[in-house]
Image 1 (tube, rainbow, N blue to C red):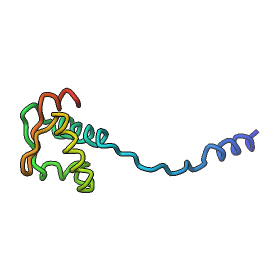
Image 2 (image 1 turned 90 degrees about the vertical axis):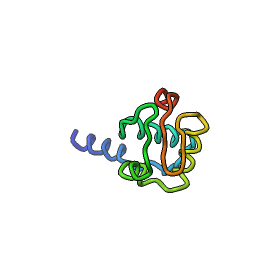
Image 3 (image 1 turned 135 degrees about the horizontal axis):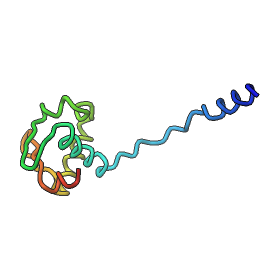
Image 4 (image 1 turned 180 degrees about the vertical axis):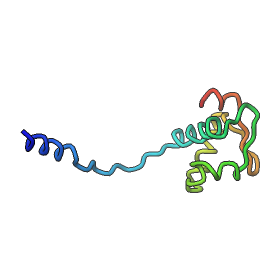
Length: 96
């Protein structure tokens, strides 16, 4: 009986095939807004600098991902980006 349990455990321990990382602009844009709202406790009209975001998960992102996230968030009206600051809009708070 113990052997049967071990065999079942081995069957479930298979390694899943690697799938490509499908991070769409929408997903990373929404993640950026969620970080601004929930991690940084920003509210409508509140602004964050890039230095403020460097301490979060965004600090580990590659620059193209960050630019794509910002561009998508701006296109949706969630954020206003000027120089090195991000300002949350009411649509951004609702999207989070």
